[in-house]
Image (cartoon, rainbow, N blue to C red; front, side, top):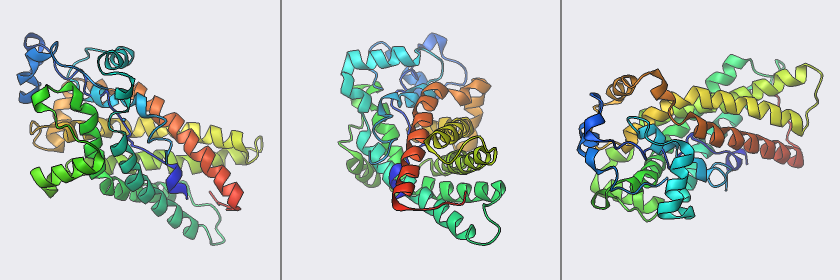
Length: 322
């Protein structure tokens, strides 16, 4: 039940992230990758495109232009300008490019991580010791998130590609019809290994965002209730989930940037370490590119997830020892 109301990735998420990765040859930094340098002169000629069953899959879809922001080598356009450009060149519905892949990702990633975390937490909390200590919640969240991230990698990779497709020249676009078409074509044209490209980053990010969301939510709710000022009501759920959303965004953003760059790469990175080094050359803030749209997506998503989840628990009479 909880897995149907959760979404993220983390990640969700993220159509505009790569919009400004092209830049002029004269201004290309030394760390620019070969494929990005080759595209240097085509900035003005390229059109740019800015991702329920879960709150992340559809409600947060228009702010997923963090993908374009994260893949850019230098800042050419901010979030608002990028959104307006997308609407002007490709229409409002272009903001929802990659929606099918985003939903598919939530059906795999979120279902797995919530199922593992909540099942293990409930079983371990049945003894006389009461609520679990925070470090155990962190370990459970990391395990569930890492597994969920790996399971959701194929849909996640297709999601990133579909969102980033419209910034490419016509002859380089992949033009996936939907998520299943994208996964089938990657498997047929590039092999099974490519389908799990970026799995290390996706799994690591999944672990961090699950710790930030689930573990921090349970702990924040427990701390709020122990103050005695608030009871177990919807305001407490809102406050605890807001804190959890902020923690999740801060923890997972560096991994999210690396994951997006790896999944959208065309061979310019030799691996995770090489990608991290190239990103670090742009400065420490490069790891937090797209932070604002990521927060705009993840914080409301986390709030909606847990507010609805708590109401479902109340409706079905499920008692949770956080």
